[in-house]
Image: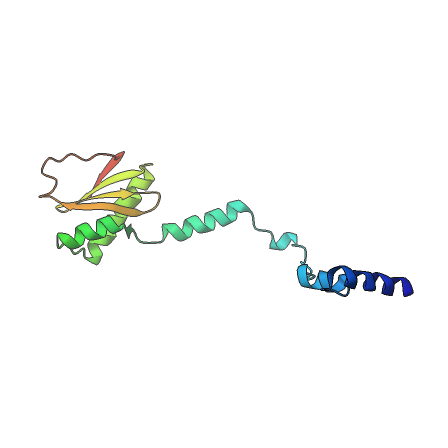
Length: 142
């Protein structure tokens, strides 16, 4: 024990901050124990991915800032029924493997990014006089 006291006194001379290694350990190292994960608690990456994918599948379409501004500036107010039809169109596009879809509904046209379930832009029939749509890989008419 006298040897330990000598070491402690030596440390005090050197650092003037800590009087023991235990204080250093307590201050800088976490001493809490992490319990091992049992096989019953184990969740695979695939299971987590599928759970997140199911959460996304149940969500409504989002509207980008650009699409929201287009709808607002053109006084286009989508009813709940139209939103549901638009979502159905996006689901049909996804089922066919389309990534950027043109969804035509009533007299409106929407470009929808299918993986993110986001309406990128929206226009009415008067704006699309040329009927030319770019950067899409499929179309759905509802």
